[in-house]
Image 1: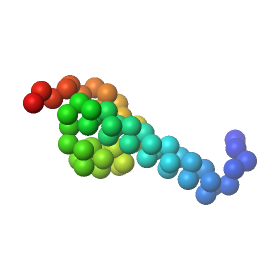
Image 2 (image 1 turned 135 degrees about the vertical axis):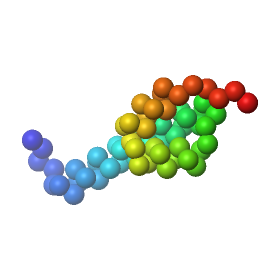
Image 3 (image 1 turned 90 degrees about the vertical axis):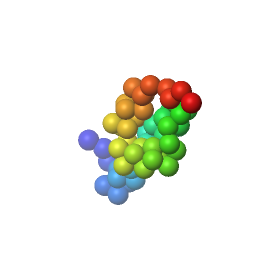
Length: 61
C-alpha cells in the first residue's frame, strides 16, 4: 500500500492516463490519422487507445 492521500493518487493516475492518451494521439497522427478525433479517443481511452494506435496501419495519401 501507499501512504499517499487518495486525492494525490487520483491526480497521479489521471495524469498518467492523459499522458498515455496524448502519446496515443501522437502515434496515430504520425500514421496519418485525424488529430482531433484521436485526441478525444486518447484522453478518454488512455492505455487501450495507446495499444490501438500502435496497431494502426499507416494511411497512404
